[in-house]
Length: 433
Image (cartoon, rainbow, N blue to C red; front, side):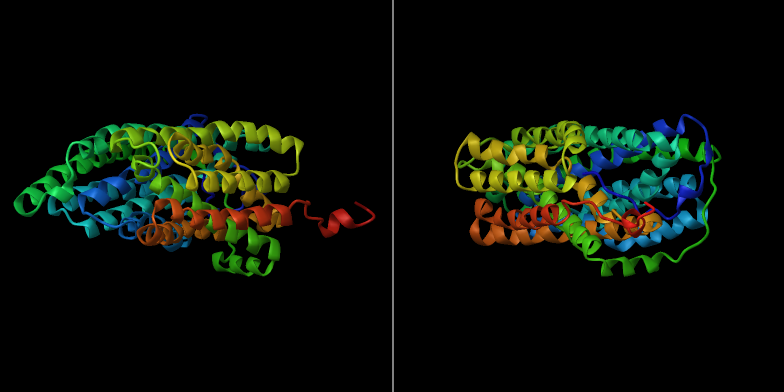
């Protein structure tokens, strides 16, 4: 998932001087936070079986993670205002390191609540890093090539979401195929949980070490960027943008899109394990996540071409309609067709976030950065929609629960049609223009 940042400074007034290797550093950030976020889709089936949870309960994994966007976006933006981009990146990376390290006590005590706390801390660090990353990549180069750099950075994000779930499935999900925790009790169940929790902890300890090294490298390069901040503007003033119907509708659709995307990604492993879908084991199902996220990576390049030819709003409406169709086909078929329809949704998800984001911000002019901050908070949809989907799955079953993300994409389709025409500004509509 590509996420917009809460841009705390408006650099339309000028550029900042920097060392050329900073671009590579930002690309690595995109790769890291994209990959770590997608690991949640592997954690969901693991923790579900480990603690014998219902779908509604295990979706608290996503709720704990994405709640951090709502809670931490504004504080992270304030932090960047105070200490600058590079130092804020270090704070974000160290917070991510702490979140990964917290998986050790969580596994030692085999407590689901501690895993949720670790995920919230980890996501708080990711939020801070994302608040840094998007505006930073726009600064590092000529204004004429900003779109190219952002597209390239998003490709690194997608690369992370494609690789991490595959490797995570091998490391984390392998043993679920050989042992069913529901058949265990007493000391045997406690031992199983302890052993399997350590498997999760070892994976995240490895990530913690890598993140700590990256934080040290960034700290050593903290003076490589000489920043030129714009005049101070109150961050909370941005919320009056919600009085604009187009922006408010677009912000709602970011909520719906992130919620729908995360809900689908969270259930894919368990969905493919069902006899009515592919009937494969957890590890094999986890490896199939690469097709969901890899489709998003491929679709980004196809979508970039189509968006040059057709109205972005119409393209958005079409891909949202395609997702709704795939969800309905998946819910009403069996076997590989059902499974592959769900996996194919990644291809059509690819352009949704940046397109909704750009359509919502269209016409905001110099207030576009403020709009970015509000939209970043709407990512909290990833905390709420999966929870609703999980509870629906507990009541009606996984296939029937797909109606929840389908309803989200209906809202996105309507927004695409609503925003199919470009905003006509006062300047553009005047005779002089």
